[in-house]
Length: 260
Image 1 (tube, rainbow, N blue to C red):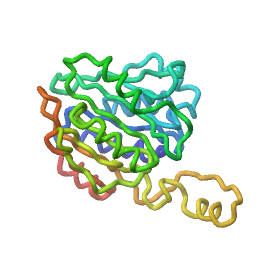
Image 2 (cartoon, rainbow, N blue to C red; image 1 turned 90 degrees about the vertical axis):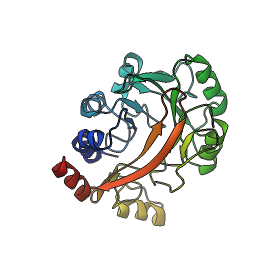
Image 3 (tube, rainbow, N blue to C red; image 1 turned 90 degrees about the horizontal axis):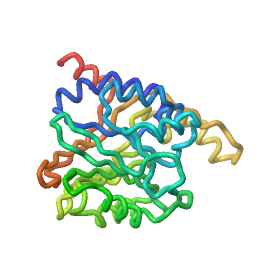
Image 4 (cartoon, one colour; image 1 turned 135 degrees about the vertical axis):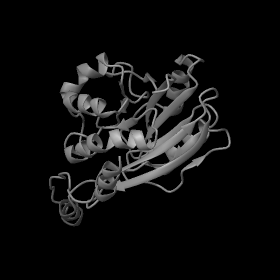
């Protein structure tokens, strides 16, 4: 959420990859540039820092300069239930540090969101396209309603390795491995300023809410944290073994850098 958060990821990720033995890192980066959209420069910066693949959401096209990159690059995807004519790929195949192929898909929810195609029908189409030998499959469910995310988790249980929610910016405490072997968390949270309203300056959001007078929702600052989830997946079956959430502030990340 914003350039300060991007820099925090850039600074922290090499150390986190080493300490946690991370084989693959996927980031939703639709809020990376000023809280809305992503630029080619930020895309390259995140990949250089150790992000393997990037998913997006409803702010995907806020920066027009990203459109050509969406059609050309293999490490970034659009929501799979966007129209076929919308720029971008519906899924990407990444390679983990251990050499295993990983399919990554992004979906948009429908409750309280702009009208989109059915995410359930879209994921069925995409899964049918992915070669059987790619056992590890990760879904970013970008949705407003928790019910949308929970339904997708149950719908895909046993068919994908993980369904991880994004968009609402607040990490949930329901991380679990579902009965069929799919890791699930309703929302993995935001990397950005927690002294904010979902990453935006508190006073501006409050004034707009109380007065109905428009105010610019600029990115906040202070108490920047990295949030996310770590999923352990069995390579041969693609089934999740464990999921844990994490939240690290600037002081904790400084200690990690010092220790490593």
